Image (cartoon, one colour):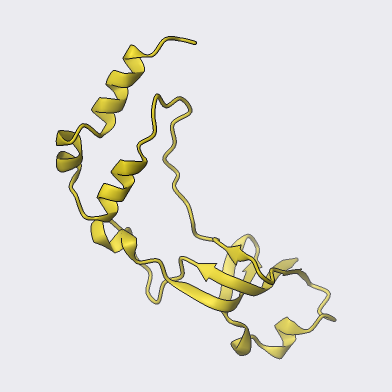
Length: 129
């Protein structure tokens, strides 16, 4: 069974061409499609685009092999994925992410007091409570 999400207000993080990774100022580019659809088949994105370009077969409510979600006035982030996580974290590092988007290197961020060594030091100073 396929899943069709249609009438999406904004389909976020779409690419014209596949990028193996994004770093520095490239992270500031966030492609979107307004009034979009997204088709998922066998657990993978198989089609997406503007609603005006959707095929009649896909848009037909009579199509029984497709579950349909109407996402009117909602945004969809199908590719928003950061597999890197920390279960315990002593403090926010959101300013570091802003610095990365602005193009600062990891060395520059570390010199400013950020980075994993800073986090590890903070963790050592935290009480178990």
